Amino acid sequence: MTREQLIPAVKNEMNPAMLNNAAVYVLAFPLHGGVPVEINRQSITPDKNAQLIFVDLKPGANWAHPCRYILIDDNGSHSFDSSFPPDVNNYRLLLKGSNVENWMLLTTAEAS
Image (cartoon, rainbow, N blue to C red; front, side, top):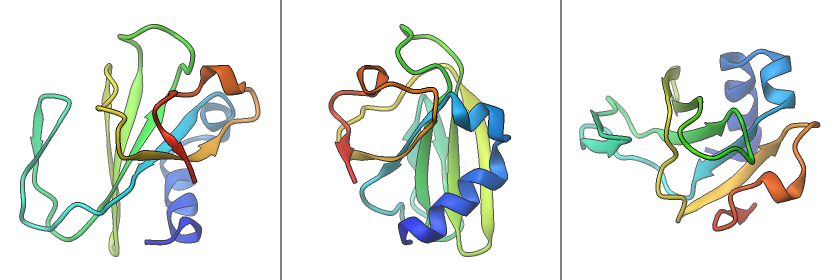
C-alpha cells in the first residue's frame, strides 16, 4: 500500500487531537494473509495481506504508555490498543503530529 492509501486509513482510526500528539510508523514490509505474527505478545493472523501501523500516543515518554496498532488491508482497518512498542527495526515514520518534536521520535525508525 502506498503512503497516500495508508494516511487516510490511519486518520479514520484516530481523532485529530490524538494525531496532533502522536508519532505514526509503518512496518516497511506487508504482513502476509493467513500467516500468524506476534505483535506485543499477541498472536495476530491477518485474513489478507495487510500493512501494520504503530502509533505512539505519548512520544518521548518512557514505556509502558498508551499506543495503538492498526492493521490495514484492502477492505479497511482494525486497531487494537497496547502499552508497548514493537521492535522498531524495519519501521519508518509515516506521520508526525504537529505537537511532536523530533527528539520524541523513535530513533531507530527510518524516515520515509
